[in-house]
Image (cartoon, rainbow, N blue to C red; front, side, top):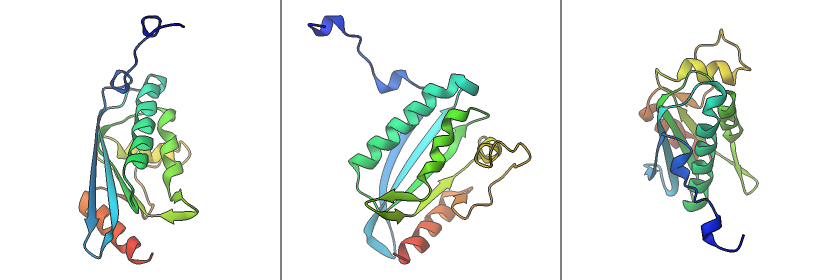
Amino acid sequence: MNSYSELRKVDFADLSNLRFECFLGEVQSRSDRPVLVIRFAGEYRHGSAGEPDARFMFAMLAAAFQAWECWAVILDLSGLSYEWGDDIDGLWAMQPLQWAGGEYPMALIVGAQSERALASLYYDRNLERTSFSEPWVFRDMAAGLKHIEDELAKI
């Protein structure tokens, strides 16, 4: 490999058609502790075909964590259409977030097109689980933000 002409150019956008956005904000009670909101939307491909979608999500999450310092994270999957695919299960390693020896609050926002499948995957592929019972999973952003605010007040 002696020049760029021998290389194949790659781009994160080539991995997936999922859309990705980041937002940085504050909760009222702790304006000194920024909250990172990461939102994914679009259709996650089924089964093993979704592996590039999962890689894209993890790459974007890693980049966001490096780019913006925060005290808490909200992962918004409410706009994600997800039916099945094991590769996304690495998301659960995020709860609780462990950075610099400490635990930081997290909230997961699920939507109608993802909750059932994500819940069954989270609960060890139990197809009878159709929703979450975890205290950090919500169906709307307002509830997720309230959870983060309550958790940051404890730190």
